[in-house]
Image (cartoon, rainbow, N blue to C red):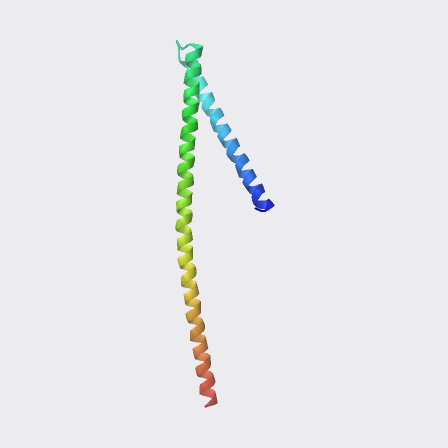
Length: 114
């Protein structure tokens, strides 16, 4: 792997990490606000609810990420198939045009020499 690809992958990893941390921090704020407004909870119950909610958010974020990655892979595969078909069609058209031009040139040469 060359340096540019490694750098791009590293930047993507950093971006993913920062996004995940921002998501979890926002989830932590939401659950802390919820438990603060809920009367009658002990500190242990609040911690349990916060831990459960953060684990759930982490799980949901992973499911969403997996779904997006699977969808991107599917679309990339479909794109490669379409591009391959287009490229094959273009190649066939170019071969046919070349054969037609060679035929015309041979006909013109034979017609002028005879």
